[in-house]
Length: 496
Image 1 (cartoon, rainbow, N blue to C red):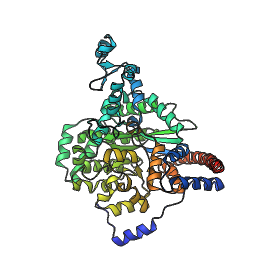
Image 2 (image 1 turned 120 degrees about the vertical axis):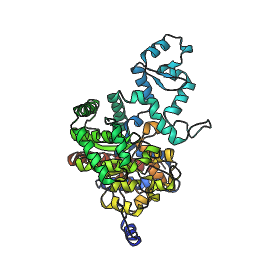
Image 3 (image 1 turned 90 degrees about the horizontal axis):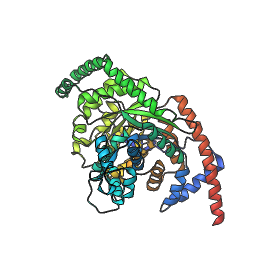
Image 4 (image 1 turned 60 degrees about the vertical axis):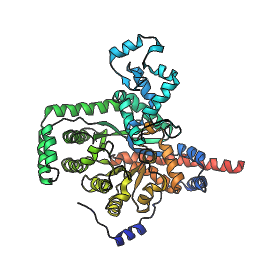
């Protein structure tokens, strides 16, 4: 199934798609003064230091494309290593979890140890810096050592800190909350944890045989769904999973900050594991008011992700029909020219929207290569489906930035968007920095930047009452922010 749009309709779309004004409250003179001050910061060569100060203080409604494990900084993971009594091998930089090995290492003099505690890693500058370059992108662009391609480095980081990222959930969430409050972010919707999965070799064989037969595949999915739905062990694993989310989330929400959780399926697994995990994700969403959506993750250019992409979209279509109240956001089109053969760039966003029914698109980088790009943008505009923009991640992983990034195309044709971080711990940045990059590269008005902040509440997978509460909170924060900036700008003018 595809979408078609004539050249004439495309022209009409381009004319009609004008930037909307901010949806925040009118704050009169303070808002006008803030707008003028901001305009002075992006005029000519952008004043990056002042823009950083501006956006650090500016309220940012939420972060909607956010990975829990990738958001935590290396330093926090090192603390978790010590807390759990593990050590880090200083040759492989991987976490050693076997108690007998850790005990044997700690019995040795420090100078003879090959597996170090956190304090010992910090004391050994060479080991610490080498570890940073494997567990994050630190120093990738400012030194000349041999290093892997950036996309490989990015996706491999999760294997290094994985043994501690899958525990200490509550402490990790508290750290993310503290950091969000410090930079005036009121809401995070994090991709927290993958749902449980069950292998089924027979399912895998059938999926391969039914790849080109939608009716046969639909029957196969229906049979697998019915079997899993009646499987008590599968049901218990889902209940345990939901319990983990609730236990981890205890005490995170308060009057200053709110967090909700997406569960996700890893697209690099066998078809039976993907389908069962996807089904568990949908059922978990219905079982919990903390879980608000389902996603699919994993390097989109990898062999299995490309081979099974259409299959995964059909799985989403099937499960969305079974569970129509579950919200779906989807990594789609996180591809650049050369990542895959050209034909692999032609359909990912299209199928995520038309087949899988995605309600938000993560990244959407390959838009300009997609066969139905004009119709994709029309559908997203008409149906109010936003794209999640991750500028730092897109530049590092895919090499797409500046004029090569499709954000201006989305903006030109009226597609809604939100600004988000992706994996700020791995790429060592903040949501404020994403706003700085957006403002300095594309020079939107203050009204558009303010609208982007409100959009991150508008498009959150939250009940209406919760969105209204967070919007009122954002109104109050913007009023206070604009009053401060108006006074600051006035004082700065007097000094000059």
